[in-house]
Image (cartoon, helix red, strand yellow):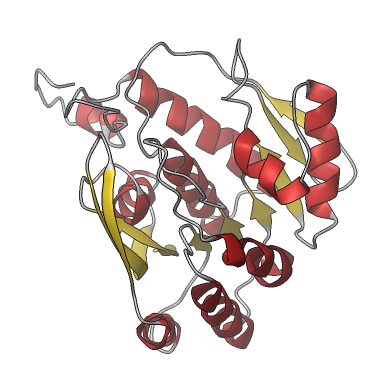
Length: 270
């Protein structure tokens, strides 16, 4: 069985972070492993507090996985401090995984900053250059490039700028624009628009985590980068379309909707 490792923060509400990643891995047919970088106290409405994990423990988690288990793909999410960024970068350089998906998590759905200011430059210098693909949304891409992104041409320019930081490919998500949430994939030579449909729902907690994890899972199974992105886009669209109205804020997506349908499970929540 193919495997994928997530290096990210824990979401006590279960909708994003490590929890979303492991669900996405399972739903896409790979065995999931995890390295927890931070513990967050959050729900569908807010992030109440964050406790970073000691970098030495993060390093030990990474080494424990790589020293014993096969790792076909790595997904990186929340790396909240510069020390954590450096620790993860050094550990991954030691093992040199072939496929690395970076979701540059910066702000939660509720507006809580999950990436410290001094960690942004470290992320650009140490993590992006080892990434096979970077998957920012519009606000994250604006931080990485230092430029406003208002048009599709701006999206292309942002992809080019992020690519120059050293990653192999870029997927710039267009969900923050009005209209259909078309994403832009750039492989260094060609642009590919990944079309999407606007689904009217407030239940979008963990969408970025889920999409990037689905990309990692599909890469682990041998898909090309573009095909992995297209398959992940289809997966997250279905997960949002059948999202769960849990909690009083941004509810989670439904990672297992297709599996529940195949199993003919009847539940009013689905």
